[in-house]
Length: 353
Image (cartoon, rainbow, N blue to C red; front, side, top):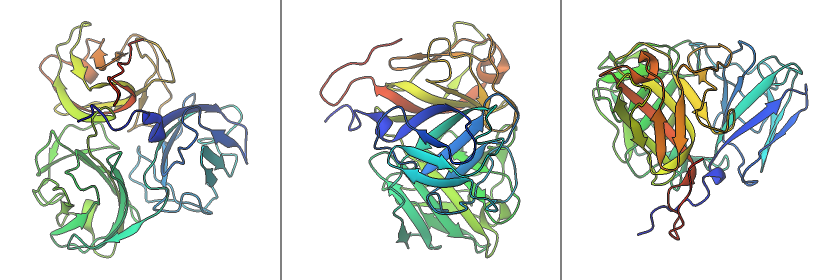
């Protein structure tokens, strides 16, 4: 069996940096030119504006696509033509907006490919869902309408997801996150710095299966006649990894094996009340990765010796002694996507920086 079936991770995930140029700006990817984004996450780097999330299940690629903010409980907003179009190698911004395209702004866009915007009705769960699944990359976008009773929702991946990120669309609510390091009664919230919470009614005390994820009676995931969006991720060897590590409070911190050179890593303390730290291979592009953004806050990008990691050929290594990402004895969860697999399908190894 091949080490990986994904020799070019940039076909499924890319980080793109750009400087704002006002309304009508087209942002072109610098990697694989065939990545048409289905899940687009943008953050202004040099000023404190909200994270911006759109996807092609909810209208990315059409006029006035509704957006959500990872740092907020707010309902989705579709009152402007925020993203006026998507192409085979990027996207076009429709308006001159501070958090997207202002001429004084520097920005980062994280982009994932699902199924090119093609959705399918999924009747596997007790609630019917609309699913856009990319089983090769282990990523699906799911939309459904809640019923306020213990239910299941089909995700279309064919394998058990390692991460579920869920948000109520039509009303205010926190983002609910399940990770393979958690129990079925537990969650983290993407918009807060809080540690693991135990709320049995979020996931109906049940971990996802190869076909469905479960939701209970909590309105955060299952209000009656209310719409939701879910992003589900499954591990793919050489491309994605979702796990945990225990900190040691040393500048010679833990090495976390992923099986690839990371392009993007997000870290959150499981038993630590601290932020969701995001690192990528473009904003610094060298070790240590000192450029940090936080999914749960509008704050500007920070740099310096605090909260740093090294991106290596087969994983990442913590280089900070503090409790935010490397406290002694504390447990942290992470999500990581590849720049290059450690070994390609033909046996060619990658190299470290």
